[in-house]
Length: 197
Image (spheres, rainbow, N blue to C red):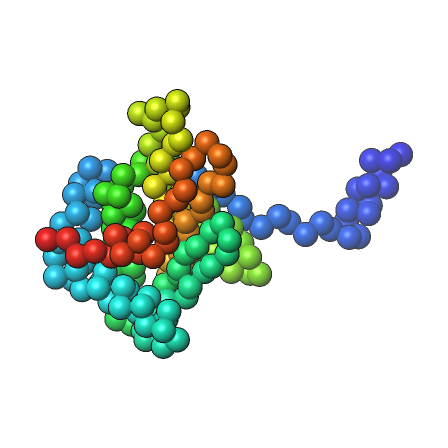
C-alpha cells in the first residue's frame, strides 16, 4: 500500500531532480607542464605575473586596476582572488592557474591534488579546478618542529557556464605546536610574484 501512495504522491509532487554534481581528479601531461614553464618565461607570462603583482599591491593601497584583485584576510588564512578581466584571455587565465601552481612548487611545496568539480548552481554550471599544495613532510625531522613554509596553499580557477570568472589563491597556516611559525603572507606574495629569468 505504501508504494502505491508513494507512487501517486510522486506523480502529483515530483521531486526536483538533483542538479549536476561531478568531482574528478585530472592530470597534466609532461607536454602541458613544459608548455606552462615556457609560458612563464615568455614575455606574455612575465607581463601577466607583473600585472597581477602590481594590481595586488594597488589593492592593498586602496586602488583598483584591471584585472581586479581582491584581498582575502582572516586570522588563519590569507589570500587573493583575480577577476577575469581584460587584458586576460581565456587561454592566459588557464595558463596563469597552472603557472601559479608551478611557482608554489618552486617555493618548496608538493602538489597533493589536482581536481575538477562541476556543479549546477542556480541554473548555471560552475566548474572549479583546484590545485592543493602542502609542505613536503617526507623528509621532515619529527624530533624538531616541522617547517610549514607559509602553510597549506590552494589555487582555484572558477568558471561559470564555461566562461572564466576568477582565480583564488588561499594560504592556510597550521596553528599546531608541532609546526614552526609560518612565514608571512607578504613574504609569500613577494616570492610568488618574484620575476624569474
